[in-house]
Length: 523
Image (cartoon, rainbow, N blue to C red; front, side):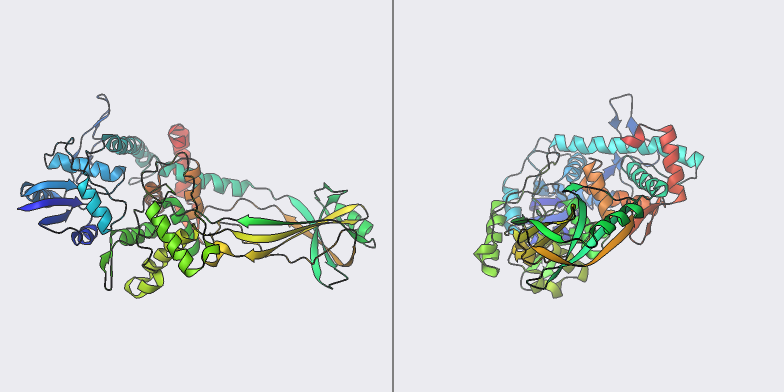
């Protein structure tokens, strides 16, 4: 008979925490959910307060028998499923299967799989949180109702096997709407005028851009307007009217949440959302490291908080002071989004002393890349701002105004380690401007007009779609990966050079949903 039985969700997690617990303790895995709504019918009593009708998942009979036997032979059972609403619901279902009173203190959670965190959690078991459990049930019921009621319409009108969902339908609609914007976009002509100028003292050349007349902005829409201005300034003197020197700071990005990790792994590593979450799960549950055994390398990877513990903050400080010096350290706190649940810390390394480079050979290539991304992002989040010297110059030519802006990186700060990626806008190069003085004349080298046309909005990438869903409050961090995976697998959307475009099927399904379930398509 075991003194303690600890039930987690995955075998990998079970293997990692076994070594932390001495004595007669058994650790087993539930392999995720053990009960769910039936596949063959709605499974919800709509007339009785939407009561769900759960059944044991087919194929898990032997596992359930084994769990019941282990529970019967243990003095104390602890339910240590994942620390989110999904994990809370799995713990509740386990309690039901094993005849454990939900008011009994059997629930343990840990945000990181380290010896201290696991042992501390076992010392302080609590009751199952029914608010979290009910939140999961509400979403499950809503997903079932939306999918079960709408999907048959798609089968009848389009073809069998199609599905609709509370989040996936909105994601498809966003992609279809964006494609329509692109198709209906009418380019607008606009012009810029660039002046290549030379500072007579330093002989340095720099570029100024047309701004307007008498320091008031003018937009140029055709060649006639441009030719008129060029004619009036071609032989005139270019006089420096104003020189403004300043300084600006660039602050580091906060530690990762689930969605920002997914976005950054997509931008920097080219990972799909599904791949990112799979690799992160491995890093969280445990990887075998030489001399240390199986170690959980990161904190829980489903979170919408940027908060970090004071212990982690202190460890980051030690690492930064040792590696970079005092001027590179800044004790930073980040505000978590007001809509965030803030149940867990941000995603960070569990052991700051385990540098990615030192364990590279023990990790797969994908594990190394993602761990390095998480590690560097976290350390950089506690580092000093980058500092730029800025210079803004206003130049007059016969009443017409040109402007030149430059910046020079003075102190790299956090940028020695990590710079956040961008979806569409490329990082601008630092324009070097000579040290000009007010009222001095600069020499015109050449005037270059440039015709351009406005461009349609870009198609969504996986990263930018996640960002859009999050900003609109649609779904949760844990739903983005399976949602996008599903609509790709259903062929509602397809990838074109990493961008997401609707298929003809996706357009038909979206149109059908809008015509018949207009409120559903906006939920």
